[in-house]
Length: 116
Image 1 (cartoon, rainbow, N blue to C red):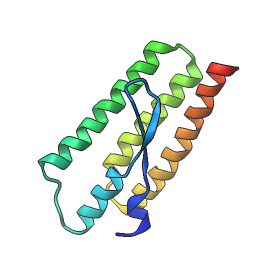
Image 2: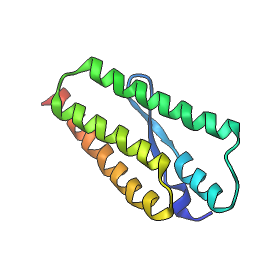
Image 3: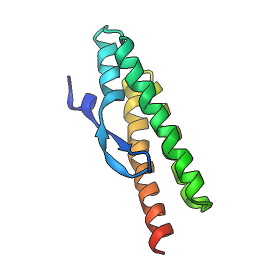
């Protein structure tokens, strides 16, 4: 496994708070390259992560009507889903870079919304 396979994805809790990172999209792509197919447990974990991501986006929509914050949150959501669906290494790398940039934009928009 290369370093590229283990670039983490941001994770949030039920309140949309940053709680850490997880490597699953990259590890899933590494497994596919090695000819290993996701088992039911890996698939469940990935879809649980998508459900948590959807809940976090819903929470942001319920907490604010700030258009910049909502747009940034939607971009993070869309990019995270695209990252999980990326078909090859180039897509993982390109989408992963966009995901990291989108997370920074969201973090800055959140800080502006909270602190002005």
